[in-house]
Length: 125
Length: 184
Image 1 (cartoon, each protein chain N blue to C red):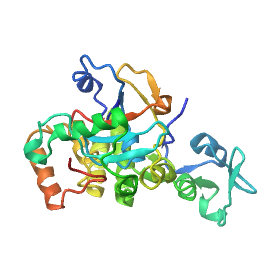
Image 2 (image 1 turned 45 degrees about the horizontal axis):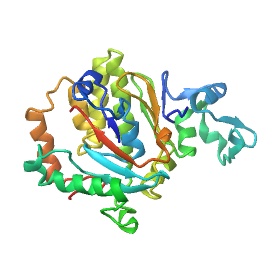
Image 3 (image 1 turned 120 degrees about the vertical axis):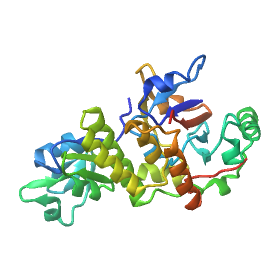
């Protein structure tokens, strides 16, 4: 099952280093920001911190993911890695996603691989 | 065919689904609008067996309801779709198709995230917080219908009343910006 790579955090952008993996799936290690077998080099480690806490929006930025914060409510929205949209607009490769149907059952876009697909975005508004 | 409602009102979407056999998905978080740089509906894409986008974001209609506003003949568009389904004929060459969808600007990208915050606050019952963030999102992307127009029913604004003309007038004055292609 695919999961959409978007995140909504409560409690503001500053998190304990231990909470980073829960938030974004990446871990800060001596060799850099790491996930599975991949590490991203962190040139300015101090820039990721505010005091002894990590700024998750700075980490998102390093991972080329957009972030927005509402200071008053403490909500932090982190978008998908930009490479997913660039795959669509630059490389013409359809990004995968998972969404519920009108009965609440999740459907992966990638379940329809090997078929021609007409993707229609619409709305009630 | 996969239909994605850029919408969180499941009942409003369901009301139009009688007799439909293809999947109709609910995109309350506007994830597809983020991943595919979709800025208005309807937006149609043709995607081949290997997940290549062979017809990028296209303002295509299944009926002539909006013909007066768009000047688009839906039957000609349906013919293109049928031809592709039948024998793979495309209305744009792959070279022409590449690059017709401009990437989101930083503001349009941020607007999607702020909209997501606003929608969550509304669902959580924080009406003031929702309004604050809907306004912020709309200021970032005033001509993005998936942001400004989509916010209207969530803010108690009738999207088919005066509010429509206000957005539509500004949209026209801005040169009808759209991330994709329009026309037959």
